[in-house]
Length: 91
Length: 91
DNA sequence: CATGGACGTGATACTAATACCGGGATAGCA
DNA sequence: TGCTATCCCGGTATTAGTATCACGTCCATG
View: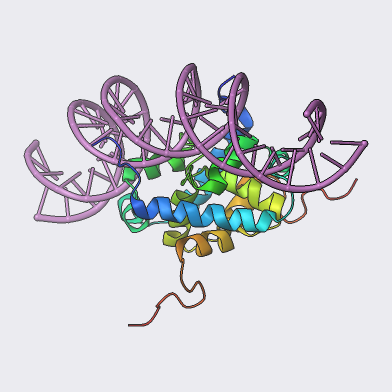
């Protein structure tokens, strides 16, 4: 194979990431946030709606900076949908 | 235009990111770290050598996790080549 | 009602990321 | 010398990210 198509899990992860970003954007307009992050509004829309599930690293970094978020928080929250604080570390 | 080719600055930023990752890898083998992060060794080498200047967000997240790094640290260090602690926040 | 802004979707275009294959160079060791 | 491991580089193939255009909808305002 030359490249793995994205798995359903990766798509779901992208949707969670997009939902987090949308939530963090709050009432601010898509256009304004996209401009602040230095990306196009369409790209931001695709990321927020989950249609771009694995964006570039620095795109998310710029977006997180524009929204006042931590990339670590974003990554952890997007990767762990259920309990980010506990994550079933029992056994 | 349909898409901006990467600027020299973006390439330089990618090289800094790669250098940071390589430094964090230390003596561990490329293959082992790539396997731990769930990516191919070729991809890791491309990122480390700067030939993949804008990797996917979750690729860097997995790599940072495998190396015990913070994505915030990585992003800040890669974005600010000179003084990550100061970064000319004056004026 | 008309106008404009913000959001959404679809299509289109082009570059980049990822992965696999092969070859080569270096270093350590039997 | 031969073997192995690691790193590097080239090419190739396919998917994905980013950007633009066009159209439609909703809502607020004139």
